[in-house]
Amino acid sequence: MLDYVTIFCKAGNGGDGIVSFHREKFVQQGGPDGGDGGNGGNVVFRVDDNLNTLIDFKFKKHFRAENGENGQGRNCFGKSGEDLIINVPLGTVIKDKESGVVVADMNKKGYEKVLLKGGRGGKGNARFATPTRRTPNFAQQGTKTTEHALILELKTIADVGLIGFPNVGKSTLLSVMTSARPKIANYHFTTLAPNLGVLKVYDESIVIADIPGLIEGASEGAGLGHDFLRHIERVRLLVHIVDISGSEGRDPYDDFVKINRELDGYSAKLAGLTQIICVNKTDLLTAEELDKAVKSFEKKVGKKVIEISAYTHLGIDTLIKAIIDGLKTAEKPEDIYVDEDFEFEKSDNSSFEIEKEDDHTFLVYGGLIDTLQKNVTMSDDDSFRYFQKTLQNRGVIDALREKGAKDGDTIVVGDIEFEFVE
Image (cartoon, rainbow, N blue to C red; front, side, top):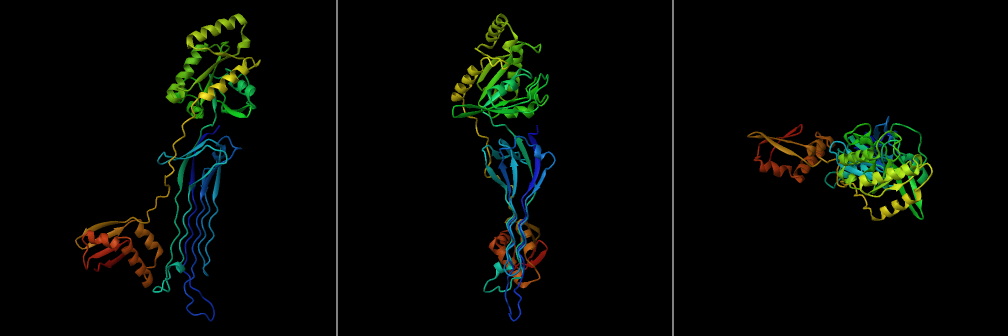
């Protein structure tokens, strides 16, 4: 089962606005008609009830939404890019790999979330026309997006978790109580994927998970321990199954202690969940042997246990009632904290820095300057005036004064040099 994977996603770039002027026979000075670029497509994650693993991401790891198209003449806007829908199983937790921040918990059926927003389309030159700037020879570029690494981690959503050593009868019990049909055989190794089943009682549905991977050392990563222990992080109640017959040559109480040790080693919260203790495979012992084994086991664990046989269905109704009663008082799992304000695309379009190179030379650089230079044609008078006005409006000129710039000083803005004039 694939339940942990890193993928790489990129929202669509915004299309560029264009510089265009109306050209038509017998129409003089038609004016600017450059259209805006289209917005880039978003990257959207959606819960798909038909999926139960992340296997689809084993070979396809790179995902890109469609770019917005560039604007066109005659005030035609570019087409916006299509959103990219990525389907994931219920219970998928999504993290930003760089920061480790949880950005989405796909914990509801049909839930979808826009994680990466497409770039905004740039404005065409028609947008920059004013009564004093009738033929703007510049346009705005669309916002370019960057690729982000995301971690997808599947944490099964279930109410009840079945725990116990391999081959104690968890899969058989799950099939008896629910509609699940796990592969069942006399394996001496653990199931390789969590099996889910739904127990229907009256109008209520209880999701039960057979959690594999619990072997000695699982909490330290032995076997597939860490891969599977995450699947019981959301459960509210544990059913701990022990082979009372010792058919595998192990002591039932030793098994019980070792499993709880692994739970505690992985998460104190999991170890603190209410446990219903079941002794299974009672059909393999005589009545006298069973009575002796159960009494000895109960004395060691300090509580009553439920005697069952998944094979003969003995005690199944008693167990189901105990599960229903246990869930009535069990606390609901805490929601995973999701940073709803996390920003993938941190805008740098307004930042700038000023560095004094010598007594009469100042360097200005940063995201604002880069964006401006991409959008204007410095050889054009209207464009250069727009550039200067933007520097004034964004506080660059005032900041230069604060740094000590005076008449006649040289100001280097990106690739442009000009003289500071008060």
